[in-house]
Each structure stands twice: as structure tokens, then as C-alpha cells.
Image 1 (tube, one colour):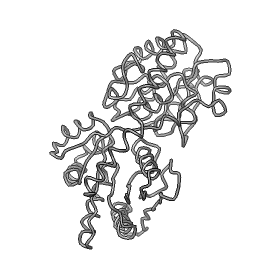
Image 2: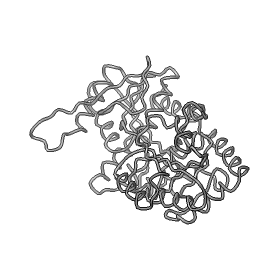
Image 3: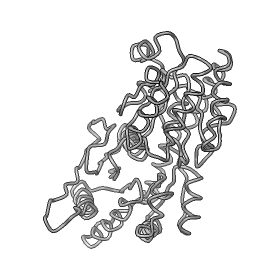
Image 4: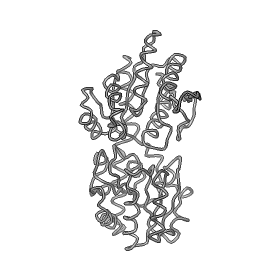
Length: 373
């Protein structure tokens, strides 16, 4: 099958999921065509993968370049000349609306191109609720040939926030557990925790919703009780403030900011505990990646996270902002070698419920359904 995938080429959840989905589909023999304004961060090319860059012409009339128009034109071009069977739009804004417009243009040219919209989170829970965007979001969802959400929580939020009648199928995010196995030659432990300290880790795009100060304050509380190091992976608007807080608390020698890392699978297995204290997570992909590496997770009980994490088994769930509770839960996991080992084992076993082998066939079945094959 020839599949077009429209995505944001970023390190955030939707871009990573869309890229990994495309690569998995390509490994199964499908022809995959990525469409975006930049090469996706995690893309690996093979004979079944093609990237099509959206070029936005610079014209003095526009204060803001009309990306949506350029994206629609690129979708039409790729669909016609690569003879796409189906288009998969990841993130409602603006990809789903562009997909709908491209479908109408193609219909006028005699080509039918069904499209699927996958909702990832902030396109519904944050950005999509903006009054200026909401009508377009609702229209695009209602007129998609199929709609999926990465968690049941997000499915319910979409219905509650927008009142849409369209059926929304839940297809969870996925991982390849084999990528997250411990490899001594790639591990950061020797230079990050040279005295054998435990390593806590956080990975995100450092936006306010991730509650970065909570990450640092939880770590500071644990640091008072035991030797431990904190590794911060990613970048974003909250990083500078996070670095200032670390300095104010005198933790510079114990906190390491590593910036963006293309393949987090190379660093996650070196951690002992993962912390994800977000106000909201539509799914919590980084938490699932931690489980795949056998790393217990301290997280909040919001959004789709409870659909992945099992309280008291793969880690602990707390209310957003409950720093003291997260400190207690972390210290409990670290209280003995036996307890930490049990949490690590259960975390790895839980990740087996979200493997590519279990999730990708759900997308393939949906593609066949909308294409009619």
C-alpha cells in the first residue's frame, strides 16, 4: 500500500509516533511518503521511505507565510504523482484540515484519496480549544474517513470538548522493546554517576505543561536522603528557568542537561527511575519508553497515563503538583535492591502490551478499511 504521512518533524510525541509508525510500515513492505516542512527528527531512510519537503514561497504580501496552502498543494502533488492509496494526518491542526482540502482538490481531478486523522493531545486539549481554531478542528474530525486517538482519555476529551459525533477508534502508541535493552558501551553511568549513584531521568520538550520545576524539586527532596543524579533530556521554553532553579538549589554537580537526543533508546536504559510530573499527558510516550527500558516511572494520574502505568507495580501515580508524594514514592522504590528490581521487572513486562507487533496491525486494518481493500 502507498501511504502518505503528514506530520510535524519535531522531537515531540506526535512527530515521534508518526515517524516510527511510518518506519514500521515501511519495514513491512508498504511505500511510505512523509510530508512536512522539515525532515522528521528520527527518520531513517530505506527503499520504502521517501521524504517530501513542503516549500513555502516568500512573498512580500504576507506577514505570515501561508503554510497550510503550501502543505495542501504538496499533498495534492504527492498523491497524484506517487499514486497514494491513503493519507494519514497526525495532529489535527492544520494537517487534518489540509488533508480535507487536498481530498476535494484531488476529487476534482478524478482521484479519490481517503484520509485518517490521528489526534495526539494538545491539538485537542489545548490548541484545538482556541475559539479561532475550534470550528476547523470539528469540521476536519467530522469529515475524516476515520479518526483515531492515542488514548481513551483523549477520545473522551475530544467528544466532551467538541461534541463530535464521529466514531473515534483508540489505537495506543507503541514501542520496539528490543531497542531499549541495556548496552554497557553506550551507557552514561560511568561519567554521570561515577560513584555508583542512582540516576533519575526526565525527557520532554520542556513546556509548562511538563511541570519542569516539579522534576527538580522532587529530585532535590530525594537528594537530601540519598546519593542520586538527575539527567534532563530535551529542550524548550522552560529550560533556562530550570537551569536557574538548579543553580539556586546548589545542585549543579548533580543535574545534567543533555539537550535533544535523537534516539532516547540509547540513554534510557542507563536510568534507575523516570519522572513525568505533567499537568496532562494524552498518552505519555516517554513514560512507555522508560517502561520498555525496564525503568519504573513516577508520574501524574492525568490523561492517558493511567492507561499505561500501573500504580504500585510499574511505578506510582500522583496528583499534579504533589511533590512530597512523588518524593515519598521515589524513595520507596529506592528503599531496597529487591524492591527496585521488582519494579524494573514489572515495568518491562508492561511494555510488552504496547509493542509494534500488537499496534501496527491495527493501523493496517484501518487503512484497508478506508481504502476498501
